Image (cartoon, rainbow, N blue to C red):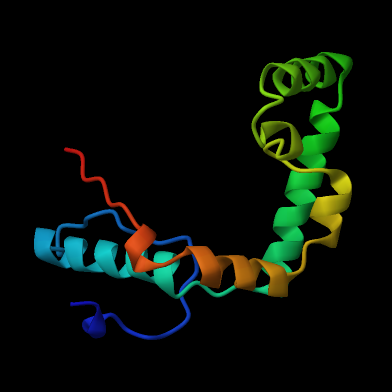
Amino acid sequence: YFAKCRDHHRNLDYSLSSSSSSSSSSLLDRTLCALFDVAFRAKIDEGVLAREKDAVLSEISMLSTADYRLRIDQLSDLHKETMLPSRIPLGTVESIRNLSAERVREFYTQFYQPNRAHVYIVG
């Protein structure tokens, strides 16, 4: 099925809204192609990664409050027997700054595989 998806660079701002000239089948085809591209053929662009890192670092700085640190400490204490304390959702400033596009590609290649995919259809 996915062989008919065009093999060209797409970005993540897919326009999947239906217009009067689009059929449901066409919308489904475009949606499935977009899903396939993101899930199995993503491009890890250095510039996009840099912008995302900046956004995450900004979010970290906004959350850098005593209340947030207290919550993280509480979560870490409550879940000390798990990996959560070493994997706080946003990561550390150092880990975000040191993240390379090559490392993201390695992670993507290792974990974004069809046998790990789940598709949920609602509606």
